[in-house]
Length: 140
Length: 140
Length: 140
Image (cartoon, rainbow over all chains, first blue to last red; front, top):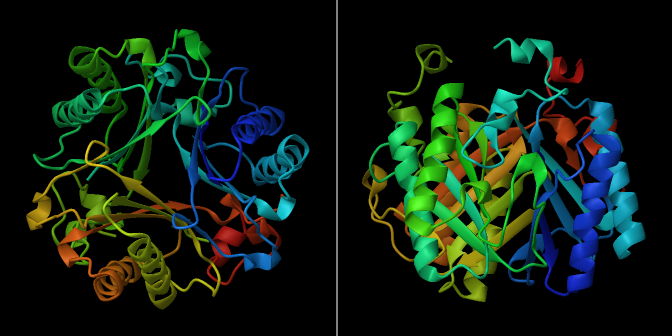
């Protein structure tokens, strides 16, 4: 269910791009309870005239290894789960693709369970609400 | 008012890209009541090291014909309208560009009527609230 | 804190791209109270088979100079602030990159202060809520 958009500089290799995508997926599996196979990731490389990043905002030292991870996901995660997600994305990107922790930015945008169609023109989470849909939301 | 972001594999032809964009616009016209000409669509092609899609999640059989359609739109559509939208996007993509229904993924993200400027530095829906703005939202 | 996604036609020069990004950042500084250095902008050029824009919707005369600015930002800005933002983006794009006002489209999408990690795997606005976080939101 999460849709992930990743932006990197063009200097990243194809091997790094695959490693970055996998690392983000594994971090989501570990922290926000997504099922196996829920992996929909769009990565776009940009040159220096397309990706503009402040090198020091919020006390970081950002480099050309910068990775922006924007995650669109259904409402329902706690602040603690989001904090765990940020920590695990940074840790796994360091392990899998040698991305410095200062270079990992994550932004979340939430929607509702009825906002997803995975195929066949159907709203799968309306037909079969997943376990993370709260009782009150199901009652709407 | 919808802003549409479409992601496809690089193997799609220019003719298919134009057909995909038109099909999504027509499906929105049929199901969620957008006016004629409300057509703002950004399509980005990606190679296999940029677009990572699980082939089978939620029981689909996804291929290189995969089309991701992310729609940013104002709040106010019912669950039924959204379901109709998904069904019509899948049907029209099949008709117009031979995209298999299993390959059509749609994700919605909602905002408010004051979140749109179509030009001239103005917020057109604040100055002239459209018919789909509910009475309570107008009262804010 | 805003994440900005800009879409332009491929015919824009690198100099124009840099000017467009800077103009949007300066307009945000002037109108929605972001701190210095809060500059995270992703620009993507598109050819005519990727960027589909109605030339006249809402009474505009759009050209190949069209600039789409999508801003992801935390909730809390008033309608008036948003209107000021649209006006200043249009004015600065005209000044800095000769973009006609009819060619400037802006779309906002809001999230919450806990939805941002600027690096180090931490949620900086949870640890240190910024001044624009309302008392009620802090209490959640």
